[in-house]
Image (cartoon, rainbow, N blue to C red):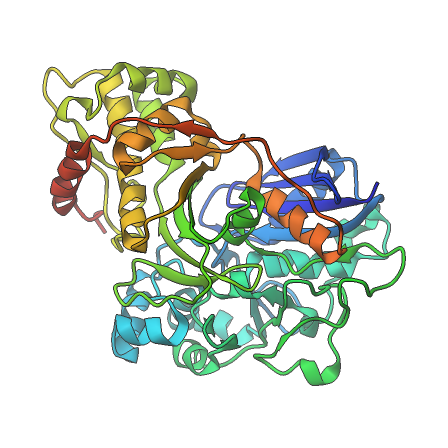
Length: 495
């Protein structure tokens, strides 16, 4: 049996799954927590990865591995490969003003959509680099290379190969020119175009004042552990890698290109053209698999690439599963009980509406917004009504994303930690106005990474999953009507 490993390095934790390359059967797994906050030193990711690998029984019998990671994070390295400052994560909104300035400087949202398929908001790497140049110029001058969280972990992993696992924690970083990325994750930087498959270094220089070394963009079946030939190291080069599926050194664990978490989730759930996936995690995402690149001048839809050669138009909300966490704290119950309470209240929560912009919001782009509750009466002042309103409010934000994609999906797949809630599954059709399919719970990001690793080996992949459960209910349009009416009344967070 040939084994592959998939890694999900998310905002909150690192998960490692070990699977049979031919069938996808789960053999073992491990997990380790990340620190809280919106800026984190990348060494915490490496330490969590090592703990998760150890809990998963090690990698000695693993033939290939792939790392999927949270998108957009800014990892800056100096000329020796050391981290210049803590990485700013996707959910750090301090670069909101920088994002607005960059959009204006290029001539507006339509110009950005045409250039890179997306309109930058505070999540995007390019906005964080502008913030760094303006607010921390000394650190900016030290930056020799910029990469993403999954790029950095893949790079560290490649540098540790050949050493005993006990020595990995202190393995020195490889040369900077060994940095790699993939088209899926790099499409969320704001300085790479999915339509052309090339870096837009002109945009990067305009934002940051310089063009640091950028990772090679690998094709879907490249080996990230194989350094490129010298002539392939020019900035902006996209390569298939120095070894193909069948190449590489015998006995050496191979490293797939990895990708962003949303791209890996699409692989893990088996999304196909015509599907829309709604993922409820720390953030909420709504994305579709497409054969053509997209460019939305409104900025609501990010025109990402995927991990296979296709494209992944995506809408992201900052507030998803944590809305339920907050409601559980307010009602003094755990998440299971919160779901039970929500199902006790009527559809529409008796007119109680929660706008869940608890951490600002990305879609719509209101980074300083706060949440709000509307329609509070004596009758709706119950834990059950609040629980229902919280879940409906979270789903309304995702339904807006479904509308923004402008597609009539063949299937709506509901995944992510928040989708494990029976209440979420049963309420979703009333908000979305269509049936939803809930695949069996799984670590879809890590599973997608493992699938990519199996693909690198040219394995006979047959990872068919169990049949998804179908949830149907009558649509309740009034839920979204009241939500839309309440949104304009939200407030900005005090400065």
